[in-house]
Length: 282
Image (cartoon, rainbow, N blue to C red; front, side):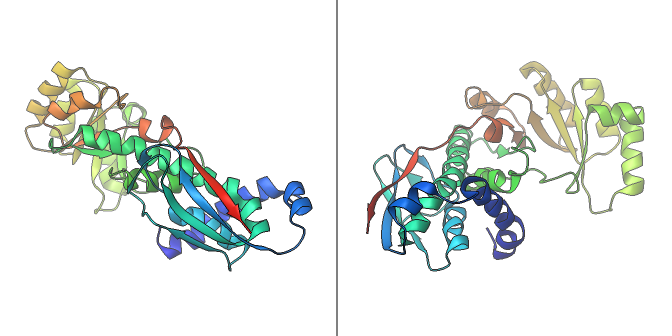
């Protein structure tokens, strides 16, 4: 992550996570290592996968003690294998012991998302379909989870509600239809904003195209209707498909003439990548 994002957005999250774990101190470490002792540990992979969050991992230690030195032999987005020693951390043994779980929580979670994402991206290779994430993220942890999908090879959809116009079913219902919803947006939103409309039926697709929207999202349509919808759009808008897209079914979308495929599963259903901090040497 860029330095500004790290300082302004990420650091407060890390500080809160450290406060949650340390609270009144580390009883175990304070007893075993009561004074400063220089030490080193290794970061070890226990599963094959894709790594993400190396900068966040390092930041956990450096926020507690700037003298801590973290070095990785891999970068975010790299493939890792079970048994690989992918990095080392050197510094005060008390800091290494007290911060390891918070640091690993970020690295494991982000790497798990990147691993799941990379598998889905590979299933779409050669199709021309771009995989994108969604806002179905863990509350307050979006910055980490969307960084992880990028490391896995996906692109980010809008980060928050201010980023882009997306008219969903309830917006359309509130406005009384797609056409009045689009008119309302054009009267208020910045002229630089693209307009995306969620469509569940072919009639809605026709209405969206008549309103000259920029992106049509085809939501939870069967394959036959998807082909009909794409034919109806006929290149007059970009096409995004969404709705229960997972690793188990993503390959079927590679056969469709669409531009984007969005999946909430990238963030809400990915597990962790099993990583560990081992081999402490003082």
